[in-house]
Length: 329
Image 1 (cartoon, rainbow, N blue to C red):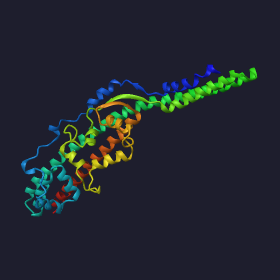
Image 2: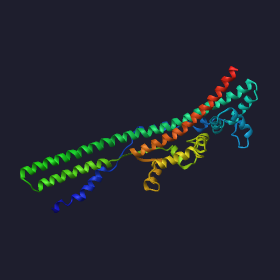
Image 3: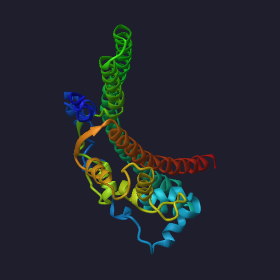
Image 4: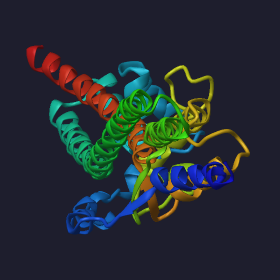
């Protein structure tokens, strides 16, 4: 039986050949879609701040007390983050002193305009990140469909070869009574069934996917980049908030979640190093699992930034409610 000793060597080679990863050329739409996610320039999205509207220093507690008396902690917090606190304090002080309605309305109009600009700024950032999510999802769906089709085909081939081998070995045994031919056929069919059935679980399809504007890289490194985040958005993500995070920032929570959920792999492993280089770099070869991880991380970042919308809405609602109460009076 020496002539059959090639099976132990050939089967692993065939398994690797059939189940190895293949790389697909990216469609032309991938490159054209990259440019759609670019947001407006920082000069346009950052509204000017007057000298009397600069962010307050901690020793200005008297000014800050005016806003604290009339507005909720969330409203005061987002006003501070978005450089609106000086205006809010001035308006609150006028309201407490029961100044002329025209003076209050003049400051209130400035507050509302700045709130609208801040909301547009947040909306633009959310739209850009959502665009990146959709880019990753588009390629993920393509790779997943191709990979699923290949897995199904290999599984079917394994079943077919196994069934044919059993039929042939049974027929040969009936015709010849016994012998090595039937055993050889049975072994060959079983080997092919194992080959295709097992390789179906190792099939990986990859595609080049670039993301030169990588918001996740800024979050991971902790270095603010003006082309990705404005100073206010970065401050919101990195400064401890008032949401019961035990002194941690939203960025701290994201990094901890990525580690605990195994998004990057086991700490200190080769897989972690590879994923860090891939996810936080400018791009590379992605499979469907890695694209799914990128989507999930971007969605978590998007959800964190959406909290700015909630706090801005809270502040705007409180300002408008006080205006409505003044009109009734």
